[in-house]
Length: 117
Image (tube, rainbow, N blue to C red; front, side, top):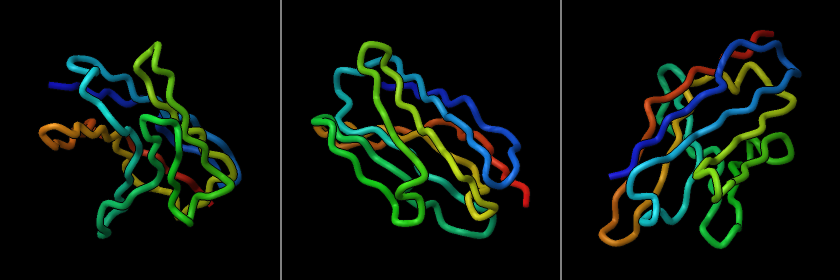
């Protein structure tokens, strides 16, 4: 099993910045990719950013150029640096980790990010 614990959410004005952290513990040797998803009220959960085990990164078009995902393997932690935040970024942000064999998705409990206009 893998446990994921997010931190760093909060309230920020439009144009501001926040950094989310996700600490992993447990059977972390089994983790392949890690990343962040978000879910706004009344909307489906959507991908924000993923960092793969080889270091490549995938971003949603809506956050490219504003958000940066990074992974510190020594600390078993993944980060999401969010700059130039917009009200549309308001959502609960979930940390995600992927196990390949057998395939399984792990999720954190979520952290609220609210961007005021």
